[in-house]
Amino acid sequence: MKPVAKVAKPAAIAVLRQATALAPKRKKASDGLLPSSAHIKQNPNSDHNTGLAVDLTHDPKNGIDCKEIFQALKKDKRVKYLIFNGRIWQRGVGEKVYSGSNPHRSHLHISILDNHGDDVSPWFTWLVKETKKKPVKKAPVKKPVKKKKKAAVKTNKITKVKKKSILLSLFKKGKK
Ligand SMILES: [Zn+2]
Image (cartoon, rainbow, N blue to C red):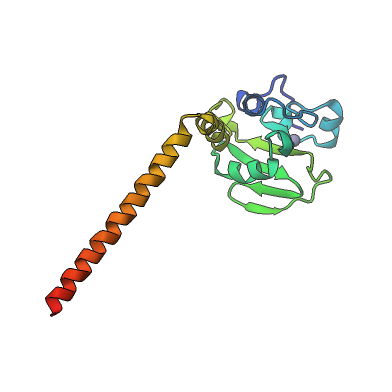
């Protein structure tokens, strides 16, 4: 049995904190860092025992879609393995069916590599980009700009057509 840590590693804590910062309304019913005593008995070699694992509640309605996160975090160098919805992905092994007793439908399990336990850099980089885009979309200045752009496109088209007909006529003249 692995010795049980008293506090979770910063990288594991950062997953839950950053998820809440990005999706403040997200549900946390299946969130978890350190194991309960029942969990330790059931799974004595779990990464939760070392503080290098985190469970994130699946709540797509409120912005935490573990299906999407499962796929995206395969690219994160800190990840040792991921379990969600009956699937497991392990670094260096790939994705396959997860045959453990808990199929992990309510949460995503993330195990973090020993040497990345203190790395608290952003976990959900693609979600950060999405939330930054939103206020720009709401800017009221855009509508008149769009109309101007369309008008400009139209005149461009006209001049293009004119140029084409001039060229054609020149070409025809040349032929004669
Ligand atoms: Zn877990």
